[in-house]
Image (cartoon, rainbow, N blue to C red):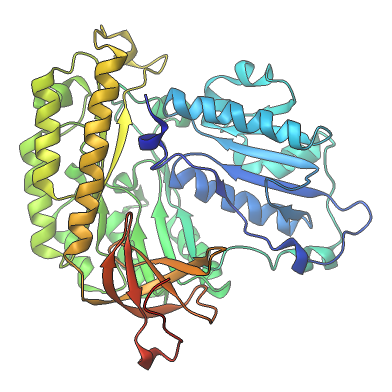
Length: 458
């Protein structure tokens, strides 16, 4: 099993990008907190909320690879690779800062708290139920104290200035046979629309240009009679957010009434629609609520109603009992769909799930070979999709600059783009002409009419 496919979504995500040189000198008794996240956008959104709580409490946020008094890892447990990465990062944090309070929270902490508690250097394990109030939990246990209000205002200025992740929903009631999420996050529950809109307005005031609506099962959003369509309508009507993106939907949650909202150009033409398998037999074993033909019909509907749309997906390779013919069904359907991106997951049994009891006769060698083939298709699919937009001018939200001076950002339909400029593009929405396909994205040129300096290549 390779890490290459898993790294498509499992990555160390620095929740707060802080240039420590620009902050004030360390004050007496100042507490430094490092936050890191593994896994999904919902995890990332929750860690952003924690970052806001810590800054409001007057604590200083630092990078996970720098000196910290408290290191917090929001863990993931979707696969055994995620578990392994979580354990590795916790041990690494202890080695970097032997005196630091190392805290594990998130899905792995909810699933197997005793397992994490036995890792050398881990000081506390806080389950997912207590994660939303983690600063208060640490305060109750005597590990931190709140700073004066004047210092709270000073440190509250630090945070993201690109895309904001907004949690609208948690939990899942589907119980797919392979999935641990319902066991660690519980049943579906949604946040009030007023609370969500207030949160978005706060992010807009802080300078964010794009909001990503996230949850375990966003399409099941429902609160006080408002469903996902109603929530999106309210966000579009009651905020002036520049770009609004959804993190993930299920095929059975897509309908024409929902898709009509994409007539508003602020809604990004990007749908993450998990396929998982192209075989109807395997989909049934997975307890998915659709079949391959229904998935194809939904994709056709989206493409008919949303111009220039990107459809990204997840594929599980090597599910117990998957035959070579059934793997080929997944491969060929993925090839036909023309996905913008494919996230490939080698099957990973999770204790407590139904699929963990299924007979698994596939050898590791066969799983590795199928994973490699699907990853190769994923790379080619992304290049093919990107090629369709070569020569077009598209709006880009620029995010960061590499040490070599190359800027990266995203188009509305989730194409990763690059350019060079001698000006600061951070958090700017600017047009870009897409000119050259690169390994994982497209090199572009900023038109001179934008007022920014242009380079044709590195």
